[in-house]
Amino acid sequence: MKLSADLAAFAARIGHEFLRPELLVRALTHASISTATRPDNQRLEFLGDRVLGLVMAEALLAADKGASEGQLAPRFNTLVRKEACANVAREVGLGDVLKLGRSEMMSGGRRKEALLGDAMEAVIAAVYLDGGFEAAKAVILRLWGDRIGAVEADARDAKTALQEWAQARGLPPPAYTELKREGPDHQPIFTVEVRLETGETEAAKAGAKRQAEQAAAKALLARMDGT
Image 1 (cartoon, rainbow, N blue to C red):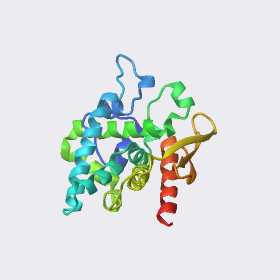
Image 2 (cartoon, helix red, strand yellow):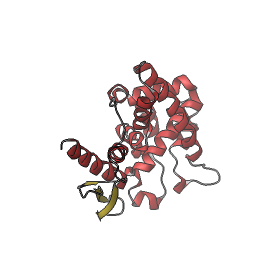
Image 3 (cartoon, rainbow, N blue to C red):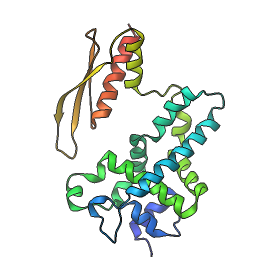
């Protein structure tokens, strides 16, 4: 099997020459277009998530030999979460080569964070199965690049940090409310408010509900820490 020109270009962008091109094709095949003879990428996604996790855990240990588990865990989560995978996918133009069914294409599937993140993990698995762990490690470290060294020393997500802030002061967990959803279904904008029991609030907008929650939590935490 020979890769099409666009897939060959994609393989070059991630820095791996496939001996078994069918693995890359499968990694880029979404369930919306799969058939009995054309399997989707879900099993590869499962494997790629584990390969990515091992590489990141190893890289973080090497980058900071004095860090505790409590410091490493949030950094790890920052680097392997779906948003990080989707950001890397966008940088290498993965959305352009995703194989999607018509309905998924019409709904903006090539830009959806979940699809991009899942496919990026599947591509990692394809590299691992094609070239082994060292090949997958090399691709991951190249694509994640400066993210590993630049991950915040305290990379707890904002929602967790705000909840811990509240609990330390005897308050219940913050409450999140979706205030508004705007835009088309394939590219929505969410407005979310976070509120403490004491009445303080902040709101934020983002293209995903979770991101809006994080942004609102970060804004409120910054304000409360400044008081």
